[in-house]
Length: 229
Image (cartoon, rainbow, N blue to C red; front, side):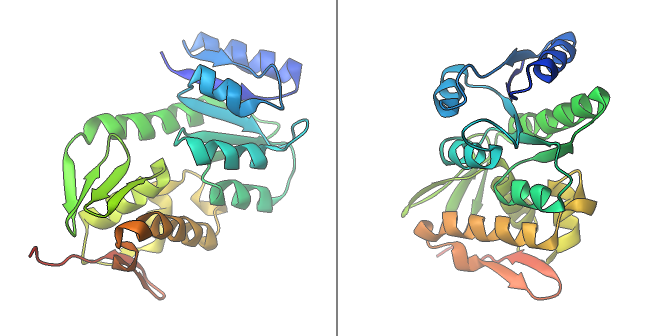
């Protein structure tokens, strides 16, 4: 049974969402103190977070940054604001999806199911190690390790690396990558992919691997390989 943390200050909406999700056998947890979201998140250890943008004390973007600094848990944003920039910001912060209020509960459930399937089925199916330029890529733990250290990646960062490494030395089209990463690709700006690739490069920098994720202007990205010494 998956545990879902719902960070929503509208008590009525929270109750409705919790009831619907419970019908699908999800365990739903709320927040008792909106100033201690990280503490409650750490105690619950949810499998997925659904978070509103407009919250008391700090907004959802703030808490997404905090959660991303501590966890790779999938995050779905909710927003009552009709601003495309909100979706762009959420994706740039590492969120997995975005739903605008008001929404049909069937849409929310479908997106939660799709995200859980993409994240956790991916992890269980990819238990083997892959190697790239002398580094070990462990899909279950979302880690890249070599003799210079280890990097912990988010789900999207690992998916980007997976796509590139499985087709190393070949250019992967930007549009193809966006479609593989986000369900709402029509609303995701091209810059969002750039931000995520740059974040991946920064994570790989301590391992000396950042330069081997190459940008092919006007085309896409390529992970380069070299013969083992």
